[in-house]
Length: 136
Image (cartoon, rainbow, N blue to C red; front, side):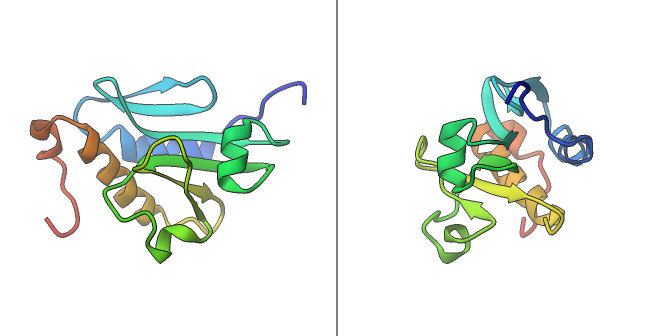
């Protein structure tokens, strides 16, 4: 593959609308794909797996692609049935990280909830307290 695939503009637009609403959140280009940060903590990272690259993501997602994936931190039990089947996957590099494949069936309200949880886990408590979340 001569050129790496990029995340579709429509997906980036939707993720920006979610991620950049959080206090002091900012976006940056990652080594591959795009990530959103609070302070120096990565709370969401989106990229495309294609032709088995990047290999760690291809292995975690169980696909050589092309597939767009989002990783995030989670306070949920990641061995719960919800997170053990598609579109979810479990990367091995952090115990509290999860991933989800993004496609035409993606529930963007669910993505917003998952990313809000990730942000609140990594943000300073004062910033996390400013985020409105379902259930309080």
